[in-house]
Length: 415
Ligand SMILES: C[S@@+](CC[C@H](N)C(=O)[O-])C[C@H]1O[C@@H](n2cnc3c(N)ncnc32)[C@H](O)[C@@H]1O
Ligand code: SF4
Image 1 (spheres, rainbow, N blue to C red):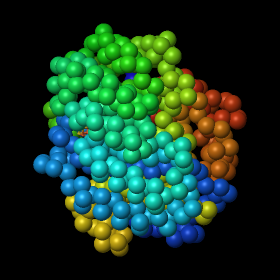
Image 2: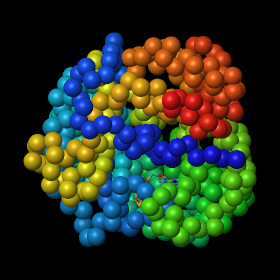
Image 3: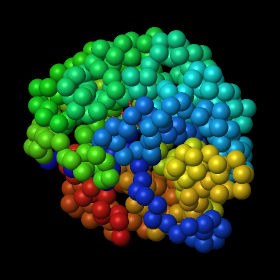
Image 4: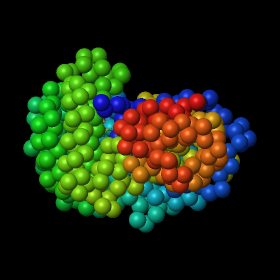
């Protein structure tokens, strides 16, 4: 049986639950965190608009209703970033992920201004991975090339399926022909392309899923993100559930996917992420290794480490409210700005690290949380005894069984 891993974590979005922390407790000393070094830093930028809201989607995405207010958005983004700069002074940014929503609704000039702003304000690593999410229904060949010349070096395309009736059932604005054309355009614009595919779709059979996968792999992109469709609360699909495959069929699809991708040379390095050698998504790997990220834009989340504390931030979700408040330059665009308490860190760390197939070195627990491994020894021992965690003392890594039943493994770290 395929189990949900707390929540799906699509490309570019960090894995963590809704805020569970007390508000505005960023003062040093509230919890005893001591970090001897700071982790790599990434930047997430949220673009909240879409042509139409998909019935399965619970992201902070809103129908554009006319044109996207690019000028107002860019001004607010600049104000948001300026207010965050003191939190990341001097630190190098190793990756940027422009996600949504549908960032490919932005004009080439808006993306150019955005990237110029990032280069001006940030210490951006020259080889930084800079990904942009795009919806195949919004792809224009010329614009993609322009995005690339502005600095976008990786494109993540929300393909979902190549089957027209499946796309219709998902309420997508594109068809299979547009999906193929978009992949072609993206591959001509940048070398690094990811395809998002969902499976366990309404009425989908294992054969139909295999056909989608074959077609996805045939483009030989360097990366695939293969997500089990989940019926998220507060979506149209949650209210009117479509006839999705049962758990056994979903599990058969997952097994088929694992075998076919492995045979074709893709490595499943995370629960939903498959890469050709050397093509992992650095931005996401930084989340999973419990690195730092500044999140700007409506609803964006961030996690930032300091020598004496780790801070969690969230921006206001409503695009208009975020835009109005960000430019006031008084911090009122923040919905959350709070210290992660030491007792919350083990679960947060494991929620990310154990998604990675090969886990992380055990030493990174202390490096990234400031806590001794002794603090979680009873949970580690229990997980090893249950066959969920590798007994290797040098790594924190799920066993095959633990990876399959990741929720059970993670719940060991909840206390
Ligand atoms: C935020 S969307 C961005 C991509 C772009 N907006 C699009 O849809 O083409 C990222 C990806 O999350 C996945 N996703 C969204 N909702 C999902 C759900 N309920 N279950 C599984 N995957 C989902 C889809 O594959 C989607 O491409
Ligand atoms: S296009 Fe993408 S972000 Fe927008 S509603 Fe659909 S799945 Fe969500």
